[in-house]
Image (cartoon, rainbow, N blue to C red; front, side, top):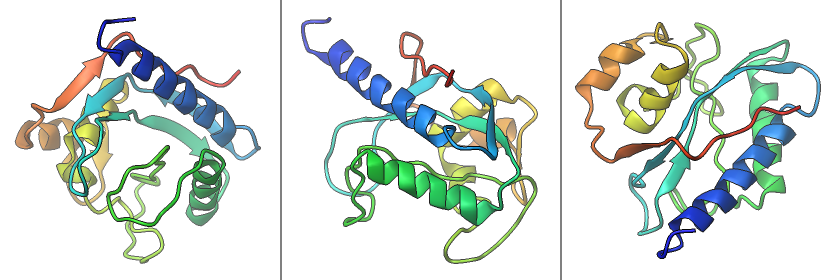
Length: 165
């Protein structure tokens, strides 16, 4: 562990996210294809809080998008997520960025995620696992990442999310 405790914090957060990944894929209907490297990022908006650890995963599913969202919210709840402050601190945050090529303005589940195309903490890890990825209606992830500031997005090569199994 480093003198400032950062390695210990990353290890604890990494373990929680790996457990969240296990919980997400514990029930049938959702199959993991790929998990990105972990990135540390400065929070966007909201109160002052510690940096976030972010990753992107790709999955296939037989479930409708709303069922996947319900599963995500259930996993967040198990890990103590409380939704009482917009952009506030959270123990775990699972978002659906895209669902195939679906475009929807449903207030419960807007697809693609309304700010994914401008968030380097989504685009950078996604590009790592799918260089040909596209955000429907916005374009290629590689082109979108080139347009946004990603100075505060740092890949953590020693932090790895382990696939369920």
